Image (tube, rainbow, N blue to C red; front, side, top):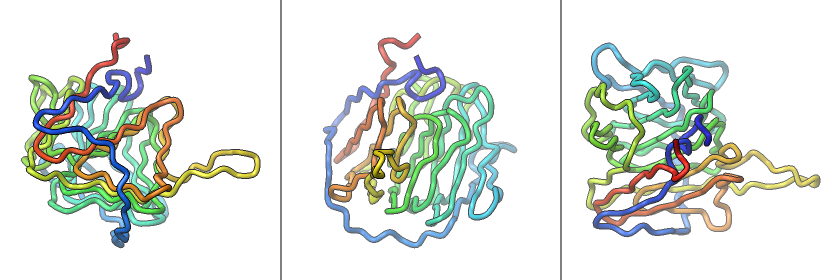
Length: 261
């Protein structure tokens, strides 16, 4: 069991209510928007808790603060865009297994640079208004990654963490997430334009594209999942890549691995 990542509690078995899970590889010719680096925290976490964004060297920002609930760290942003050549890193405090980032401002996130964590926690990134992964986008994460246009993440009977109806983080949200909830008649799309991984003459694999660490999982779950033909740029060696599209209101359950203890 890998206790340090999303897969320590989940193997992404999925069931849908009022929707069908679809694998899609749609041609995406949409040009990436010049986003500039625009990672702006909001004030919806409650009380004095707030995500903090600070410079972390040239063309880099470090995200700290947030709301800690046992093994879970929650962040909330008005906007979240990473420009080409820029990097945004989520700080990973000790004992945190899962980082949750919601975007509440009503606009799409354009990830044109590097999305990173500085530890081995899994990262959930949800923006119900859509996510664009540009041609030069890349990952530098230590665990598994979920990118979704879900409205909220459910935590069983403990409650939800919502991007469309943001509220203070309940003290009960200290358990593992159980479901991605889609409440819109038509969920927003995820568009992936990241470039295919390549090898050099010695067959060394390039780190370009969207690659999670070996043995970890990469999930894209939204409305339409638009993939640039023959150049998906997704890699999870020894792990899983799951792509799911929902046409209507529905839910994607996150089910514990049978071997989980």
